[in-house]
Picture 1 (tube, rainbow, N blue to C red):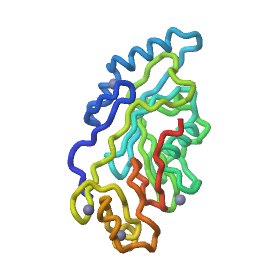
Picture 2 (spheres, rainbow, N blue to C red):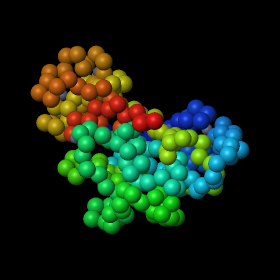
Picture 3 (tube, rainbow, N blue to C red):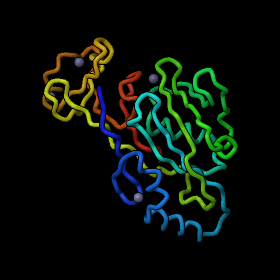
Picture 4 (cartoon, helix red, strand yellow):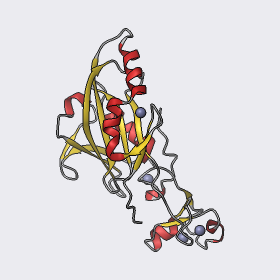
Length: 227
Ligand SMILES: [Zn+2]
Ligand SMILES: [Zn+2]
Ligand SMILES: [Zn+2]
Ligand SMILES: [Zn+2]
């Protein structure tokens, strides 16, 4: 389960891959992104405050997103997006708060621009049983016109953490839920070893997907952005 290398991600605009630590700076200077922003700003319509949000799984910093979000959009839009790209298994409750568990709950109808100030970090909890915790921080703000008709645009995302087969150390592609639940082992398997793996009480092994919720409450993906 050890993941030592710094996580890497890909810029959605130019396709460049880089370390997580360099992505925020890259996005502010990315020439492809700048061109798209300039184009949008020349279109008719109102200017608004647009937030750069760094989203990160609280348990594994290898799972992260850089999102751009309209200031007038609401937390429920962010909740919808997080469920789509990372979390949704069976319609559990969720909430935003400041100060994590037991912190001050922030209502879903609140606007992004009312909530995010410098230094504020929000915690999103999905499912109060087998919970997934996500941390969200505003790392940049700009005045401009949104370059998407949706309240949120994906700017960058982590590359899936490298997983090794528990049997042979080759790249893993599957996760055994029985290993995870009954033996407390992160049971990653390659295409070869998945065939002969004896466990079947929890169904077929799940394909690895790019989400921190994989395997929790049976979550199996698809871990794709909702739009
Ligand atoms: Zn770029
Ligand atoms: Zn569930
Ligand atoms: Zn193997
Ligand atoms: Zn197993």
